[in-house]
Amino acid sequence: MKSYEQILKLDGLEFIKQLLKFEQQRFDDCFFSSPKSVFEQINIEFGIFPNFNPYPVYFSGDITKPKDKMIFIGINPGFGKIGDQQREKEYLQTNGLFEGYRNIFSDYYKIHYPRPFSIFGNIKSFIIRYDKKVKNNEIDWDWLQENIILLEMIPYHSPNSAGLRINNLARYINTYFRATTKIIKYLNPKQPIFITGFPKFENYFQNDLFKKIISFDKVGSVYRGKINDKYDIIGLPFLKMPRVGLNQIIKDIKKP
Image (tube, rainbow, N blue to C red; front, side, top):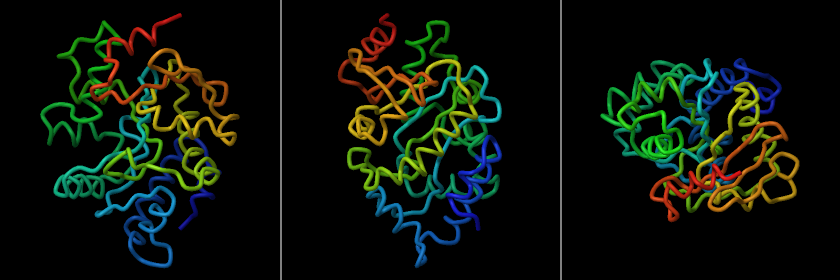
């Protein structure tokens, strides 16, 4: 099995495919087993204590066709019910992580959930206010499959983002966040990337270790900046019932 560091030397779609192949193998083979227990590793690095071994999530959506798609970045995937987790894991085992996550909106969520839920429902509410051309009844799982890609800042599941922490920031930047920036480079977005739950990461982004990678300023309820001086970002509060309201968030985004 290649190491995470070896895979990081790859680029483009091949990097993403090999990364997910590596993650699937180590979650299948080493989740609880010592001396290289994945459970212990993510506990030490992020304070996450999973009671199940769902596969990590680096992206959701058709990453092979990134042109003109809206790109969102979440903090990390949450836990669902154990039965739902097992069903999703079986879907991913059948299809493989790359193909499974690439088609997850139309091939899995559409079958098992009548409408966009959780973060996807929040993204839907945001989009219909951000882009007036998109109507509420247009956005279903097929629409999301065609129009968005969701990345995850930390790919491992946590039941509560409020307790999320990064215990070794230098290692995180050189591994997991490097993977995120390599995926962004492959996607090559021409419109801003939306980072939801940005305030949870603000203190980390202000660290000297991050200053050469991310720059940003706060504008009202949102943040504007760049990744690697190239890709525009808009940092958003969590989109689930934000204190300032979605309409105010949109106003702040559109300020000159």
